[in-house]
Image (tube, rainbow, N blue to C red):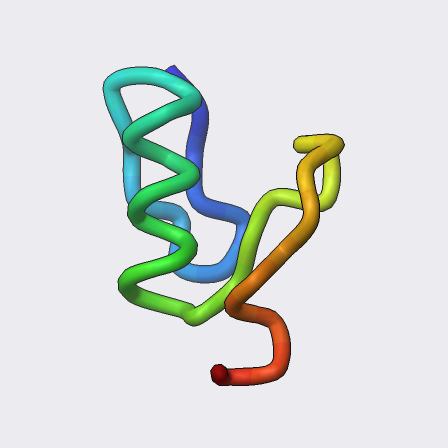
Amino acid sequence: MPNCSVCGENCDNDIRLLNHMMEKHGWRNPNVGTPDRNSRGY
């Protein structure tokens, strides 16, 4: 299982990890090659 690199929380899969990072830490996994619409907060 992937672990959150910020708080160490265990996630079931990459999608849950990505959602966790965005919701809890306001950050998106840099390994995902899609534009980050949330990086500037709007």
